[in-house]
Image 1 (cartoon, helix red, strand yellow):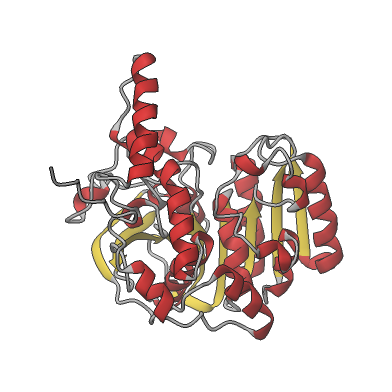
Image 2: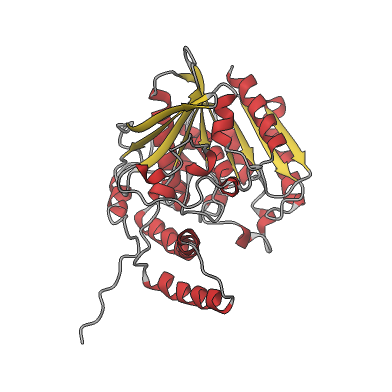
Amino acid sequence: MKAAARPSAIPGYEDWPGYARHHPLTAVPEASRPLASALGVPAPERTPRVSQNWEETHDGVTTSELHWQLGFGPATRAWLIKPSGSVGLLPGVLALHCHGGNKYTGASRLVEFPPGRSDPSAAPGWVAESNTTDPSRHAGYGGRALATELARDGFAVLAHDTFSWGSRRFNLHAPPWRTADAMAGRRAQWSEQNRTPSAAQEYNAAAAFHEDTVAKASGTAGTSLAGTVAHDDLAALSVLAALPGVDPERLGCLGFSGGGGRALILAALSPAIRSYVVTAMMTTFESLFPAYLDAHSWLLQTPGLARLGDWPSFTALADAEKLLVQYGSKDPLFPEAGMRAAHRALSALHGSAYTGSFWPVGHEFTVHMQREAFAFLRRELA
């Protein structure tokens, strides 16, 4: 009997290792080169050619669904949201979605869709996302669509799916062997609990197991999960800077949780970022030992990164004029001592250019925290 063919460990991304190996590291300021090297950030080929799927104006904002093709993997889906009727150049902000244990969706969790446009499967070839009109998809964001609310505040906001999420997710319909074995156990557990998982829950469970394989593939290809995510984010930043109505001299970014880590790395790599916000993603590496390592993904824990410095120290590489970091003093993913130590380190590094605010909340980006973040960006990018 002929043995079954071994499935691809990186389904949908078979062209990724070659791209990563044969592309030079992205061009960054000299001080940031060790960081780009440690992460293995491939240089985006060029500003991608952007196509628009649809555009609608509703409830004070104009939302456009965009897509572009990078040099590997599936196409990127994104949304540009601007105040309706805006004239002249607007400050541009890249809104970076969180990890959230939810790779089935990406940036759509940050967007409020106009009537009739709530289903991202309107773009040919993409699988429909479930519960796109359910406020629970904004979990962690105070029940609000972060990117849409920020656009109402006077910004041109671009929210894109990054590597491994949403439109850029892996095709796990035929998962690699380790993922398949782990999923067999998970399905048995669901069966014992009389649970019937949705397609999104099935995918997210598989993606959680598969992230270890993605990390191994990244290292073998000379990059990392965080480095490939940074590649996608740099490409999206170049898209934002080139869009009509966006002032390329007034660019910022913000993110919650894994999105906050992405904001920090993006600012460290790109001098185009003028100000940025990191929410619920700041601590010291030391504080993660021994009990908090499993609270975080490979997006934060790149091998070798700590040899370059501590997590707060990478903010010193950014050319950004101002930085806001928001902490949840009751955040279960970080020990408070680690957050306080990071706060002291950032205060020493940046002085008055740094603002740190502690909120009596868990791992979340509340409405009040969003208002502080929006006011900060409005003040610094105006």
